[in-house]
Image 1 (cartoon, rainbow over the protein chains, first blue to last red):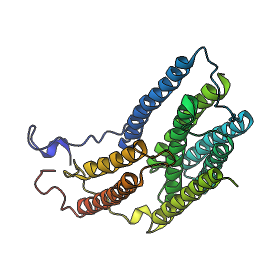
Image 2: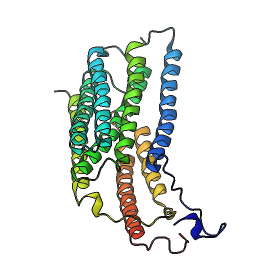
Image 3: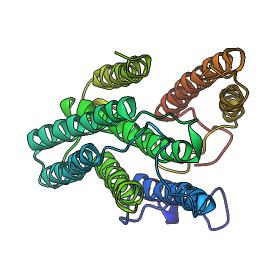
Image 4: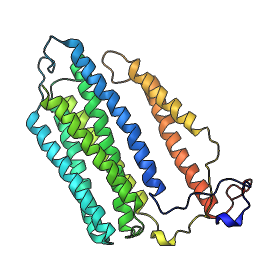
Length: 201
Length: 115
């Protein structure tokens, strides 16, 4: 329906059909904006808790430890997955669905590997969520991030399945772009989490 | 193997199961070209109480996590009904959205409104 088909002031507004940013991508960016506020609150909680225990040392409860080496490996895995995701986006922009399938599968595998590594790390830490302020904020921050990685893995699974059904093309792949933006966001948040918890000691 | 490791292992297996189910669900059907496009215009979702159902489930789960015994992950009398309500709300909402999408495709959506 065009603007000329209806006199002005009658009926509901006509949907914006401009060739600008796709609605799905705008929606994803708005969602990520809300997620930035969410993680901002979690980081504020972390630093507030850390300041509240000063001058006591900020460290895991007795018997517990942080595995910096494993966390660094997991960081490398997640950063690498951002690159593979972007390779997939560039592939579908060229219309290469075969490459999109391959890069999405690799990205999903890296995401699952990250989650597996994080769960293994949890099982070896030696402290739980209820072991002091450190345990609570550590599990809250990393756990919510892990939940977001899992959400991204679900999105990647959907992209992979839809790619195998031939639903994406060079012109129609907004879902791939949206999921890739989300995946990059999750990656950036993890770099913040890793730097805050493991490097800023 | 400690109970903690078994617990986290089960969470990992659960995640893989969910990813597998998602893959199977989205692998069904034909290519996108076979799907008709909905008519152009403004299509707003119908009023729904499902957000309230989902919130109720979330509140019950949160209450279960808050009001738990010393050796419990969560209070089962609150968390389990909450989880059931939450999952049922999700499934119901997706089904309602799919139904509404089909109605839109067939042009019967929003007969009361001018498109």
